[in-house]
Image (cartoon, rainbow, N blue to C red):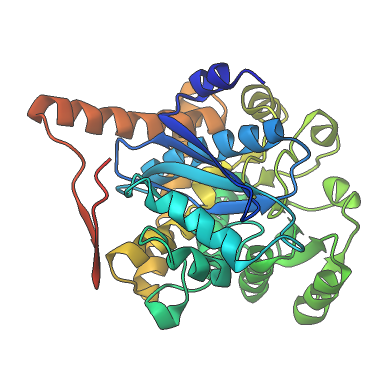
Length: 372
């Protein structure tokens, strides 16, 4: 893989490769852009097939975090980390402490949090070695599990999509196919059930599917069948790249809006294909920003109610994206990129004019020197 060509493609500021054979650590941290503030993004742990796959994943994810923070109006930049390993077999205290030392060495340019394959308890090990970690246990002043806030934000994004596609922002009697019944998918299922939506649920974990069926009266379908499900809305809440050449041909949905990252296998081509097919797509990094909003609130002194109210602003974000998409006749993901990039450009222009730098950020009880 041509590393520097990849960095040029996504315009990254810095990529750090961390290797500690004694701790079993092989990690990559990607800092995409710190124009708005320090790069914040979770640490993903997966048994990648190759180091090239891990690098590609972290580059795309960190870029998405930049745009996510910008759209959400947060004073944060975009970053992400991946640890190459099997989260079911390779986790231990020494590995995460070693990773924490790498994060500490970046002096606040990157702040980490939990992500796929990592947990709150893993972040406690990281916290033993660095201040620059969020998503920690509530008993230690953190916010705990961010999934409820993420799902809350997705729900409000779905309401915006429903208003555009169905002429009403109520989801009562709307059929939603949820792919992935993990923490966010299950939380979203609960919210939608309360709102009167009819649910289809798919997951490779049969126990989670049974739970959704029992709790919410959901219809269960196989992981493969979900792409052809008879539903109004498809909500991907698990895997990336699920919108691709093969699946688009099978879609009969009016809306695609869910919490998974990197849903488009090819951002340019597949965004246009959805538009041409008349499917309204809520860009993933726009609609799933509730998790980032949650941990940003942790930095400033956590209040769950404030985080939930802030996540409700995703409704307006999605409405603005849809409006620009319609006005310029461009795919929604292109419209979303445009809005995010414009805010970054405007802030950079202001800073150049007054020759200022990103401000320090503080967390209750401890200071973060997080200038970008």
